[in-house]
Image (tube, rainbow, N blue to C red; front, side, top):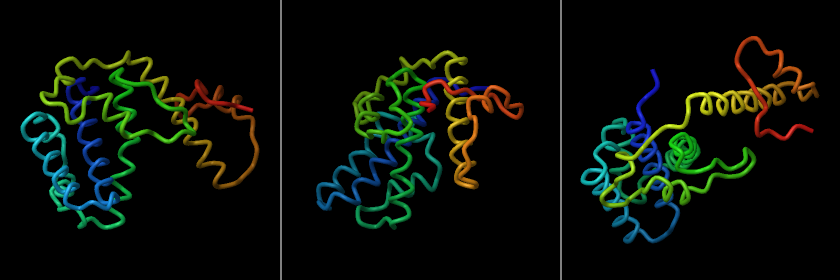
Length: 180
């Protein structure tokens, strides 16, 4: 069964927190960044307990590490979490997704879900988009992902629209994809 909107909101908040934490490693102002990290933990514990419940132990440990202590791999991996956070914010109807070839704006995602707002009221008002709309978006993303992986392997042109229309192994579509 699909998760409820409140849980999707909480997981989105957790992903945004992790991505925001990664940015603190890059800014170059450790004292104020450490204060911001502590403020983020305070927000999670006081205003957003649903977010705390969605954090995996390793994610919570990453948030608790002092600024300047994350490895390059941890910073990179956490920074990428803004992309799935954008998808969750979209599924909640809080924002539109950028085009597939445009970088996600983390600040936009954070604003869309009320990240660091106290009190955090978004989970109480959260609703998910229609299941069909979510499944359509997933089918389009799956098609794009498959084509990019397939192209990476053989670099051969194909009639992608025809392939998508006749694919038997998964529902695919090209909604929102530029086919030339």
